[in-house]
Image (tube, rainbow, N blue to C red; front, side, top):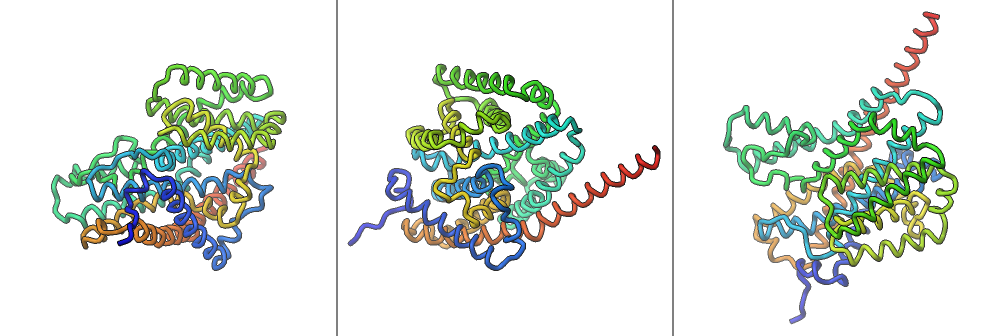
Length: 419
């Protein structure tokens, strides 16, 4: 009788884990390609390369898929053992940790770049428009997902286990991006597993947005060659201290370092000499070595891991496309819908595994069968995220841009009339 690998074997065999990852990525790419073939809106969103910052757009798509793959593996263990834990596999840990670290760096970079643009042009930042644009971009889909979580809680157990007042407070915390906390809803143990807990990172994104007015003045001081070099040296010293301490970095400090890397990257990108360095072939070789070095680190909680991740980020910012992978149209579309993939995949995986477990199928699956099922789930997630972007997220972004431009024009007309 031939031996068929089990899903648990992924944790201990890189020879099994890499094909597993490759098949899920292939399913996502196939779904993305079909969307591009069938949707004019999707095709119009894949902007030319010269309108992008390096390969960050394509990178976002791969990062979202990495989180999906990590949670598909972790959720399987949760449904079988009742525990949501990290694994002993560096690959699967980094797919869940370093991917989010890179997301934080991208956020730090993009919004610092925006502030630096305002500083260079001596114009106003437009704080009101910035924050409203974040609300328009992040809230609608997130609110729909939290509503789906609420419905799921009561589908799983229709009984009311606490007062409506308490349930209302719990839902309020969830709708507020779990900034006040992430309580279980209606006493459903580990409610967060319904969405693989992804909303924790959005809380830190909002913390970063809240800090932007404070960051404006240090960025103003650092703008220019001298300030950039001081900032790079300061970050290098922080990472060196972390390396010498030989301890894992606690969560809040770790995430702050990720955002700081993005901020310093924005300064680096504005400096011509630094930009030439991160765009060079030598630096791309260093990035490949950094990627290989990540493989010997169990997780992303060390200063060494932060430094290696930062090198990878700078290489992507400098145009390193991983042999053209990050510039493929399918990759770019995955980048456009990465927010939807990030928010929606947890629910899709949860309900699929819940269905399989209730029918006694899940524990009987071998690795090949589970990989096939997950590939189908991945296609569905890409389709859902694409529909969300085309019919919800993009129309709202267009509406807000038109409203903001209209408001600006009206304000200018009033000013002219008064003069």
